[in-house]
Length: 137
Image (cartoon, rainbow, N blue to C red):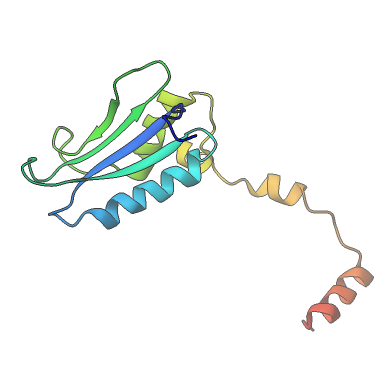
């Protein structure tokens, strides 16, 4: 029983500087990525970077079925800062599932014409009954 289990891919890893106290930032990115890519990734791992590793590390990497080594999606030092969540989601999407629609992240705008077209008009009697039911008079 025990033994090594087959590792499913893709896997996302966020390596963060523990001494810089970036755990909360890493956890925020992890939550956003799991919410968006929960069906597309197998695991997401938070990896604290401690001495003797160089301070200030913040890396996001992805290991896929086609890459035996992790692909660095974001490196705080190389890219001189932290990613905007929109940019990070787009980079990971482009790597894992280029056809995935990210909704607002991709700039889709809410259309009032679409929203109103989906609403059925309500008769006056139905509207009055609804107002009574909800206590709005």
